[in-house]
Length: 84
Image (cartoon, one colour):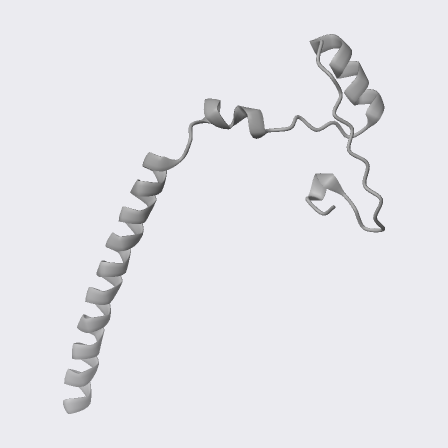
């Protein structure tokens, strides 16, 4: 019986800790959402990548925009996967 009561007490204690952590997480996520810049504010940081120079040049002509060329001189460089 003592083991059961100890288990019950520990279970109840764990539930209160989990509830407190959930509240803290929700509070942090709410604050993050309030402070995060909107999509319009972040637009200048997005680069519209093209898989090839030919496609980039074609799109640049159609959209009247410049081509931003990045050359990676590394054995395992691959911008599309994020490794450069």
